[in-house]
View 1 (cartoon, one colour):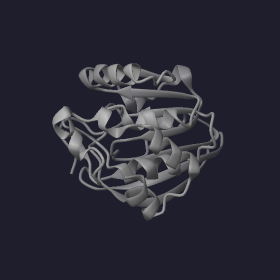
View 2 (cartoon, one colour; view 1 turned 30 degrees about the vertical axis):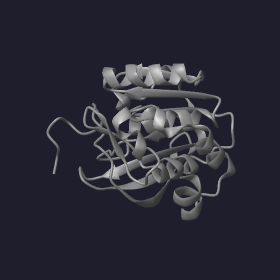
View 3 (cartoon, rainbow, N blue to C red; view 1 turned 90 degrees about the vertical axis):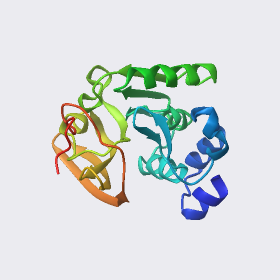
View 4 (cartoon, helix red, strand yellow; view 1 turned 135 degrees about the vertical axis):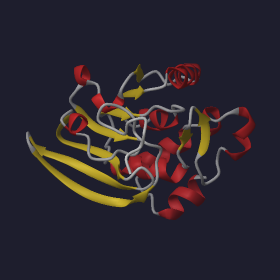
Length: 209
């Protein structure tokens, strides 16, 4: 997987590659789908959610520009796989999941496999985790209709936010770097498609078109 789907497609950050090698992806996939765990596409995990394809996990992790030892926030725990990859680079990972069933499942997998530096909260991820802010890096693993200002404000100075932004069906993956108290630089990385980000500052139950 790492050789063919990640390194061969341009991911070169040694920390990211090492993290991908150290996290067994099949642990985060339903038993019936484990023979597909290392294939190059997303897989369902229940509740209408997916585990992202390995390349997208690596790309988004690399886009955070981690050097090691950071405090990272993830919005959208899902299976827990992305948080596990982040935890092999960052010193602390805080992750928020809207669905309590998915959160419990992810917690059980992470705990049973020694991922001890990950904190999970059940709640509205579009509100971020204010009491733990600021964060050196924030990753949003669901598509938002716009950059979520509440999350953006929880970045440390020089912190990086990676978030898919766009329509209900297609988004642009963006990296936003906080340069000052009210100064941000935005970059477009690539077109992508994620499940919708639900919550107060995300999509409502009926999608806007």
